[in-house]
Every structure is written in C-alpha cells, then in structure tokens.
Image 1 (cartoon, rainbow, N blue to C red):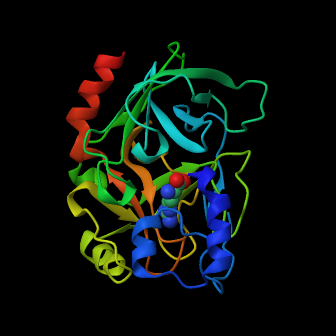
Image 2: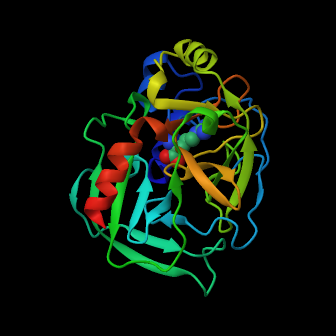
Length: 268
Ligand code: ARG
C-alpha cells in the first residue's frame, strides 16, 4: 500500500539487506530494501490501458486498486482497508483510465467488510469489500470458478509503481500479461526468504521484468472470457517487484468465491 512507502525508503537506507524475519513482516512492501536491482520498465513491464477496455477497474484513495463486483460494491485487498464496519474514509475514482480525466466518476465508501480470517497480506484471506454511497452505472466484473480459469497467462492492471525504485504512482492505468507460476515453485522461492506461502489461497504470477508493484494492491487479475473478463485474483504481495524468481502473489478468487458473492449480495 502506498502509505507505507515513505517509511520503507527509510528502512531501505538503514538496511541494505533484510533479515528473513523482516521480509516476512514486510513482504508486500520491501521495494526499496536492496540495492543493485536494475530498473524495470512500466504495472512493471506493462502498457497503457486503452480507454473502456477495463470498465470495472477503480482506484481507491488509500493508494490501492479495486474492481466493481456489483454496481455499489468494490472488491479489493484486505490489507488495503482498516477492518470491517462503517467507513466513510475511502474515496473511489471509476470509469476512467486517466485519473485526472474530467470524465472520472467519483464515489465514497459507506462500509467495509474485510475477510474474517485476515491477519496480514502474506497470510491468506487478503480480500475486502467496500460498499459505496451510490450505485455506479458501470459494468461489473464476474468472479472466476478456478480450474482452467487459473491456467494463465493472466492480465494484471493498476496505477501503481512502474518499477520497484519508482517513488510515484501513475496517473494512467497500465496492464500486463503475466505467466502463472506453480504454487510449489513459488512456495519454494518465498520459503528461502522466510515466508510460507498459503498455497490453497494464492496464485503466483509474473516473471523477471513483468509484475504488479506497490500501489497495485487490491486490483484484479483477470482472464478474458468471450467479450468479457473474469476475475481470477487480487493483487496481494511480493518481494520487491518483477524480480527474477519472485513472482507476484495474488489472492485466489476461487477459494473465496462463495463467501465474497454472499457478502456482496448483503451489501448491495
Ligand atoms: N502490497 C502491494 C501493495 O500494497 C502490492 C505488491 C505486489 N507486489 C508484487 N511484486 N506483485 O500495493
């Protein structure tokens, strides 16, 4: 999440190498901790999103992404919100790729429902729903069932950093296609830095030079389904961004589909 970036720059100056424990605690945000990683190009390694291609995509004021799962409900990451209950603190910008566009549709949160089992982004259950102050007249994004849905390559998008070193968020939405990495290979990589992947609640995807990054959290990972899209994941965490051997980790929608749908209905 973006608001942690400043403190992590400090962390990066103080410690050029993180201990495994620090990585476990900070895995989603350790973007400035190690020197020597070559800068990677813009999501990281992506392209500018064409207008109208991802109409359900929204930007949240705390610096996360999200997707309309119902006209009045946004699905995002659990670590992007403070908890469940009434909440009018979140601003939502929808309906545009350029956040500064005059066509931007704005809304506000009225309530948040965070996954009951959420204990931190690397520990699974990293999802939350935000109820808006009104229904938006925009397409919604369907939740995938898993199986062939999750084979990849998958599309990721967001207004987050275009490189691990970048200190800024983007005005224009970017997207990229990422290969899926097996749970086994992903778990093995992260175990080396002290993080135990919650395999049945996560999908790993990305490769050197192509990944989501800080500020993309909460945004959807999707696959095309005819002329529509289906949501397969939610941007959750990773070690730095687009590093060789460390793919991005996404909340596996299929593991929570029924719960998210029920909670969405209750909020609608
Ligand atoms: N936790 C980050 C956020 O709050 C998202 C990190 C994604 N990292 C990655 N390498 N895919 O924006």
